[in-house]
Picture (cartoon, rainbow, N blue to C red):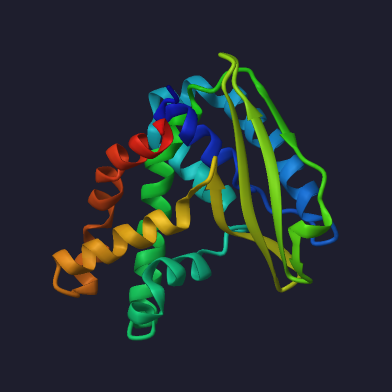
Length: 215
């Protein structure tokens, strides 16, 4: 049975977490950043255990340059809701999204000690256009479990950024889109209320994620 800790590890390691030179390929970005993530964890593991906020802050620092939070947020909100949202609402949702994701999944990274991460060679069919590609990563944990992570990267202003992540066929973007739609129903389409409550929505998704991962 696959644990939420190991799933969370796969999810976060699937994200290219450090800004890289635009000349590098998407695969090179992933390979370099996976190594740097592990170095960060190994150098600061005990500090992070004692101070979760330090882990969250460091994750946010490395996520900011390379994740397309604008595109991700609008995708989660869908056109139906994002087209009527103000830029202030979009920005507040992005900030809530970033901090809660880092807090929810970040602690799982502390449990990863050992194992192997391999970025697979690109295939012609992975390239979905000049500015969009899929990259695959294999993650093997020290207890013998393995995961395939696939994520979509888009090139924006000549820099590769992540737009969505799929772990073992589990589409993270679709999950959050469904959670957002449910929250809008519960709050009677009050976007400000959903944004304010997004942390609770993410936390409540733990059980659903565990069920998906264990299937």
